Every structure is written in structure tokens, then in C-alpha cells.
Image 1: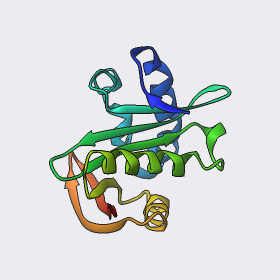
Image 2 (image 1 turned 180 degrees about the vertical axis):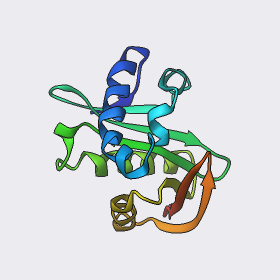
Image 3 (image 1 turned 30 degrees about the vertical axis):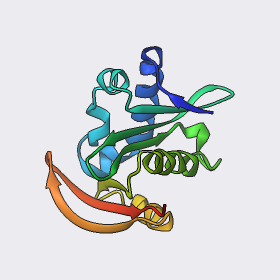
Image 4 (image 1 turned 120 degrees about the vertical axis):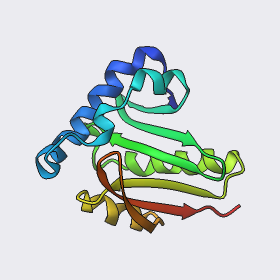
Length: 148
């Protein structure tokens, strides 16, 4: 089940994010951006979705509306949720919400060193638009056009 996060989900959301991004700390030499986000504020603004399984929050999705696209700002899974198709379900949720809002594309970015993400997102129909340094992070920007 995917639903909008509630304030009581904050601790679980933060735990999923910390666990999902912790393996990248050594590779990047610092905590990835999502580890420093204010999930209380994001939840209060209605930007966070949670995917629940039998054990609770198994994945999270952060969606930020933009003028002409929906920014898929973060997708993270608990370790127990990997390999169960939950990541694809969360991306499909983002696509559905973008379409429902009348938007024609979904955007995202990932760190240049998170190479496995580049491959995964390309497999899901995203293409690279550019690379840039933003907030001190070397990022790869991608987007996916959405059919009506």
C-alpha cells in the first residue's frame, strides 16, 4: 500500500532513508543529500509517500511539484524491501501522480557516483538531460516524458 505520509511516520521515513543511503557515504566521502533533508517539513507539505509492507514502512517517495514537471526528489527502500518490485511501484506512483496533475514529464537527479541508479533509471525510461554541481553535489539530471 502506498499512501501520503503522516507526521507519525517521520521516524520510520528517516530510518529508511538513513539505511538506504548509508552505503554511499564511503563512496562519496560524505552523507548524500537525502540524509540531511527535513522530513518533518516535507511530510507537513504533503510531499512524502510511504509504501508499507507487513512490517511497516518499507519505502519512501518524495515528490516536489514544479511548474512543468514533477520532481522525483527521493526514492528509498528498507533493506528488507529490496528485490520485491517496490522501487518500481514507487516510480509508477510518481508517474501516476504526475499524469493526474496534467504534467508531461517526471524529473529526477542522482549523484554522479551512484552509477547503479543511472542504469536503473535508464531502464525505467529516464534519459540524462545534463550534469551539474548543486548544493556541493555532482549530480546527473534525468527526465522521463509521460504519454497522456
